[in-house]
Amino acid sequence: MAKGKKYDFNLVLVDGSWTAEIVRKITSKKTVVSKSQAGFASEAEAQVWAETELKGFLQNQIDRNARRIRLVSESVEDNAAESAEDRAEESDESEEDDA
Image 1 (cartoon, helix red, strand yellow):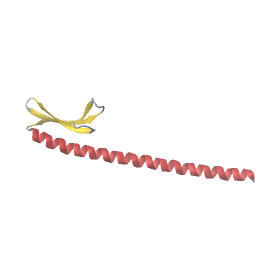
Image 2 (cartoon, helix red, strand yellow):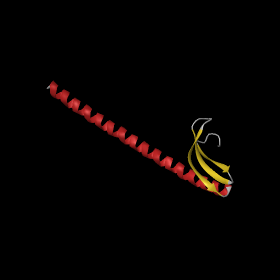
Image 3 (cartoon, one colour):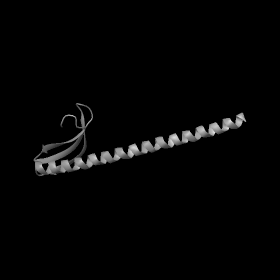
Image 4 (cartoon, one colour):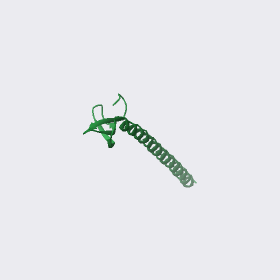
């Protein structure tokens, strides 16, 4: 795994066939396998699969993060609008009490 990369892939030879693993770096010393595929006849086949899957995996992460950011910003905007409405109502009520 390259230094500083959160996601990468490993290729492992097991009993004469290759296994490709998409791995996520949790800490500097610990990783977890997020996705794997076994049974490749050659290392090249496994590498092509791993590179393709990693690109798709990273794109899914980017899309998911964008959705989360959009939802959070919409929620913040909604809360700000509600707060402004509440302050306006309180201001109207206090003006009526003063009159």
